[in-house]
Length: 76
Image 1 (cartoon, rainbow, N blue to C red):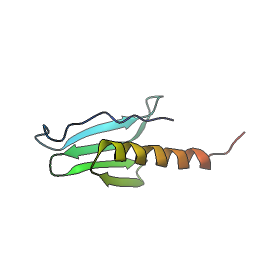
Image 2: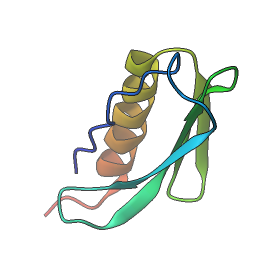
Image 3: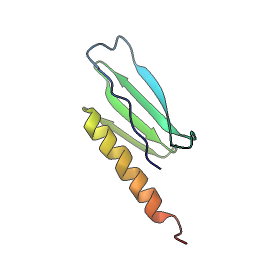
């Protein structure tokens, strides 16, 4: 269930932006907030939250949460 965060430029952001995050099936998995002076915040599955300085840190957080969730699912 990969989720790719869009690249954002906080230097050009005039206000706090908000992007809905969806998985490859188009299902809602969370929200991505970003803004100059506010950094980047990711909410996933209404349960996991992280605030970071860089895009790479946000993507690593998303990938880590998804890896844990996938590992907890029953394997056939």
